[in-house]
Length: 130
Length: 307
Image (tube, rainbow over all chains, first blue to last red; front, side):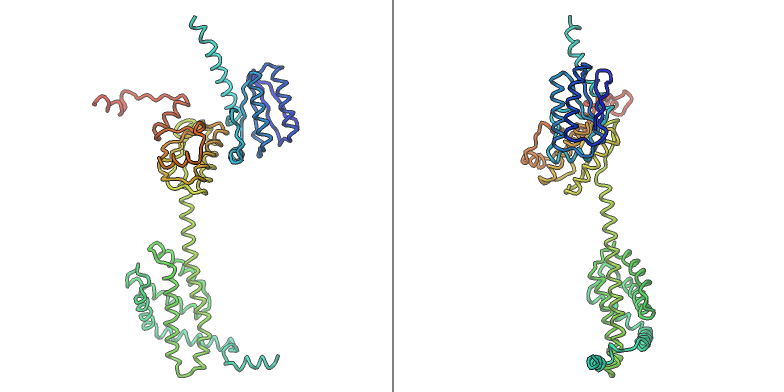
């Protein structure tokens, strides 16, 4: 099952539609890497609302996507983790350290916008001083 | 085979008594109990007081209840149907459970009545042993059934009350309240056991989702202490809330709980703790970008100007 990746302004949105196999996850990772370079995206949102199970491989892959994205200059937000999934994950010790999470797509977009605003403020600060 | 059957027949007429004669005996029995109603009832009430049962009730109350139980008892013996008694026992239980009447007392009084009535039968039929035997054969199963019915009704009623109360406590135990847009508070009061901790997590995570919360203030001022399992559970809850994109601020952590958390080795970098609930809400407002300003006409402003 291929994951559709949508481009929205500076962001890429990967909206998972059904349970994914390990191979699907790796394909998603490669596809995102390709597209982030192609569109020069600054943020990636991965929507996992439909997943009612997240195993260690899925969590590790998502974490590695986030870290790889960081190296390529984009922020990653995982959105839509279900409450039951969230609790199961922490019970199994599968934490997404260093990865941003948000309630849903809307929140994820708001977070990325916020992040971009902050970046611009930091970069713009010295100019104003001149 | 035939000899065995014969042996059974020889062994007193008891088990072989025809249904007709049993019914006749019961009728006779009922007539006897009706006739001696006043005297037997008084005897019973006296023995209840003697045995120090139903101490929560006054003498008059005991006598009044004894009268209705007695009448119900006789009625069951007469009709053989326990439904009316069952309803009465349930009703009685409903009235006496809140007054602290215990199971052993209820069973005690029913068994006492059985004994009182049996004694009176002994007295009446002492001359004719065979007849007494048959009377008791008719009486005992019915009496046991009555004792059983009353006991079971009482226990059922009691269990129903307990279930209701548990339900009420469970509903009360973990409210998730929205104080501002995107800010929830979760005041926890009382001891947390593992079942309550699980329920708390469930309600919190669901609350975050339905209210679209970004910050949750979890106030545990009212929690005296936690064991390491529950402490761990709280930490996991905080981590799970983060996965839903919400920050949890913990407030009112007592010295004892702080010690437990340190002992189990919680990564304090992940925990956001503030001293009290007010501080927690202020911190949450800061995170959400709210700024609270007192207006000039407000009560708080008046206090400051007076001072």
